[in-house]
Every structure is written in structure tokens, then in C-alpha cells.
Image (cartoon, rainbow, N blue to C red; front, side):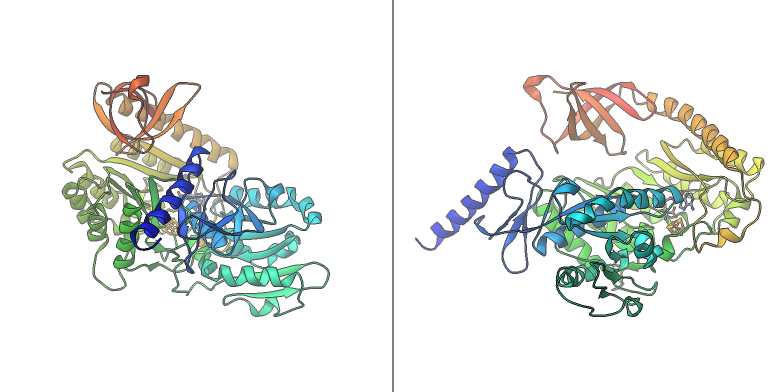
Length: 523
Ligand code: SAM
Ligand code: SF4
């Protein structure tokens, strides 16, 4: 057999492999690896332990297994998709339970004290698994913030890797594997700029990847194990240079560094070719994006991604008010695939407090950006983040935040009690707000916002919205859809017209709740 028939057979084999995995109803992708082989991701029962060649033929069986758990924001979840891809490309297979794994990794968040405590509790819970020879790795913001102190607090941890060092993971994994047999290769004291390993002869192995803030490297990898086959994330900018007084991110994620618009667009096109229709651009401050080659502004990049053939929806998060230009609204007006939703964290409605938080905008400047969005051709849904109980927040400051909520009419507010974080300037501020008062303010704010949302969501009753079908809720016999405005719209459909996951359908809204809509699919 030669020529076209060989190619045909190759495609057919790959298709069979793909379909047989789908029978097990998992999201899987054939991920091409650098040496021409590939691996089928996340299909637990069939081939997830196999390395496939491009024709779908098993060429090796992976021996090493890992379990990953992710805490925190969307960026962390997407980082984990890249870490999973990297581990698989290094010959590891993902398992769904800690007990089955050789390597257990936690991708961590330290934005608030509670998130950080959760990580250490999880690590303590699983210390007992060390006796079975399992290895533990801590990745992400807690890793970068606590560094080698993690080894003291949780001596069973073997690997600590901050998010700015993920590109070193393959070498770190090699060190981890080699360390079981070998002796010391380097002392951890030498590791601050990128990595090192130490074995202490008592079973303790310590491998670190900790970058300084100045790194200009991004974690770009072709090995991304995207878990949703329809919606995919692309990180376009990493780190943060804003240094808000309360926030640990500039210390844990390094300085702001953007990818070239060419590489972002290449990834978007590749995703469209794989069948993705919904792309979300990510960054701690996504709109602070600066193309290193100077070819595109953030708004131009947004528009270009929205024009990629096959892409039906583009979202972006999180936007910082300081860098939010009118051109972003103009892009949303001009390109229909750009979603009519903007998440623009305000943090406080009081200019005095915004100044103390070092946000570098006033209430009036923030409202100007809201006015741009409110004058857009399509109604743009706006959501925000608010912190209550920042040191020195008076009752008047808090009242101003409540009046801002009334004035703007957000479709959603993520509200947090201020949490003191290491290294941040706010640690030096007096006038801490007692915990009970923070809780009271949070409750008042959430109550006020709920009333606003009840009224806002009611407005949609009787309208028709396009949704992307995301799932099916069996007990309720309802399909789960998401509107372009990022609202959840649960709906019914007659059994003959059951929609496909990932498809876009028209739904008539028949009811509303504070956080979701209810409807019936139009046929
Ligand atoms: N870069 C975005 C911005 O500036 O608006 C925010 C990203 S931050 C990871 C997500 C949210 O966490 C912030 O908007 C803020 O409301 C909250 N946050 C950050 N540090 C906090 C702290 N120390 N205490 C409470 N909430 C905090
Ligand atoms: Fe944190 Fe401020 Fe940077 Fe946002 S802009 S990540 S709140 S320091």
C-alpha cells in the first residue's frame, strides 16, 4: 500500500481512536508532540496512558502518573492546562485520584489568606501518602511567595515552582526523577534564578524553580491540554506592574510581559482549526497588553482574534480601568464576535480609598469608562470586583461604593473582605477594620447587589438570546447555555430537537433569577 491509501489509513486509524475515546464521553484531543508522536488526553478508561503516533497507533505506554489540583483564578486554571500538557509531553499520564498518582501537584493561589491556608491544609492531609513513595509538587503563587519555606512547613514536598518558572518544568521533572537515585546535584541556596535540586540522603528531595520579578520569559508551550473542546483560553500577558497597595500578584507573578500579537493570532487560528469557537484572552490586566513587536494595540488584537475564521465568540479578562481605552468599546461595536461583556474591577466607589489602594484612577474617571460602554451600539454587560474593609475605609467610603453599585447597575459583583498579604504596602497602614465589621459590610453589599441583579435579569424576560450549549442538568432536565453577555441561561428543548454541546441556539427567555435566566429553545 502506498501514496493516498497510506494517508487514508492513517487518518482512518486516528479517527477510530478519537471516536472510541468519545464513546467514553470524555473531552479528548490528540496532542501532537515534538517527535511526531502524540497522546490522547483525559480519556481515563481507554488510551490516556498511551503514547500515540500521528496515525493513532499506540507506540508506548506511559508509566508515570500525576494528579493535579488547581486553586484560584482562571489564569491558574489555564496555567494548569499548560502544565498538564507539559507533563504529558514528558511521558506522564493524568489520573483523577491522588491515590493513583506517582506525582501529586497543587497549582496554588495566594491572593487572599484563606486561599493560601487551604493549600497548606491539603498538603497536610496528603502527607500520609508519602509513605507510598509519592512525590509532591507545589506550583503557582504560594510556591513563588513562600519559596523554600514550603519545604520547612511541608517537608514531604519535593518540588516548588513559581508560575514565572513553568518553562523550566521539563528540566525540573528530569531532576525529580533522577533525584530518587542520585545524590546532591546542587544546593537549594543556588536556585533563586531558575532552578536547582538537592537530595538529602534521607528520602528528602528539594527541587526549586523560583524566578525573580524581572524575568521577561512567558510560559508559551504547544503542549496545552485544553479540557473544554469548544472554549479555549489564551494568555496574552503575564505578570503585573501596577502594585495596588493590597495585592500580592506583582510579587508572585513577576513583571508585565506580553506575547507577540503574531503568536497569539497563530494560537487562535490553530484553535479555530481544531474546532474551538469561543476564545477567551487572559491576563491579570489583559488590556495592559503591549505587543513586543509593536504591531497591534490590545483593541486591534481583540478585533483580529474576533475575525479569525470559525471563531464565534471572543472574551477578555481582567481589564484594568487605567488602561481601558475607548478603542476597546469601538472594537466591540465593530466586530460582532467580540462579546458584549466587560469585567472592569473598581475595588471601591470612594476616590479617597482608591487613592489609598494606589489604583491611580478616581471614581469620576471610572464612571467615564462606564459611560463609554453605556453608549455602545450593543448593550454591554458590566461586572466588577469590590474589596470591603480596606484599612481606613470609613462608613462614608463604604456608602460611596454602595451608591456606585446603584448608579452603574452591574450584572455581577465579586466582593471580597480585605485580606492582609505579605510584602504589600497596605501592611503598613493603620486603622485596620475589625473582621466582624468587614463581614457586615460584605453582607450589606451583597444584599444590595442582589436587589440590583433581580431587577436587571428580569428585563430579559420575553427577549431571545443566542446561547452556546455548555451542558445538560439531568435532575432538572435542563440544558445549560451561556449568552454572549456571559449570563447563564438554562433552557428546555423538546427531545427531538436536543441541541449538541458546543452548538449555538436561540432561546426565548421565560424567567429570571438573580444569577441566571430560564428559557425555552426556539425551533
Ligand atoms: N488585575 C485585576 C485588577 O486590577 O482589577 C484584578 C486581579 S486580582 C487577581 C482579582 C481580585 O482579587 C481583585 O480585583 C481584588 O478585588 C481581589 N483582591 C486582590 N488582593 C486582595 C486582597 N489582599 N484582599 C481581598 N481581595 C483582594
Ligand atoms: Fe493586583 Fe492591582 Fe495588579 Fe490587579 S492591577 S493584579 S489588583 S496589583
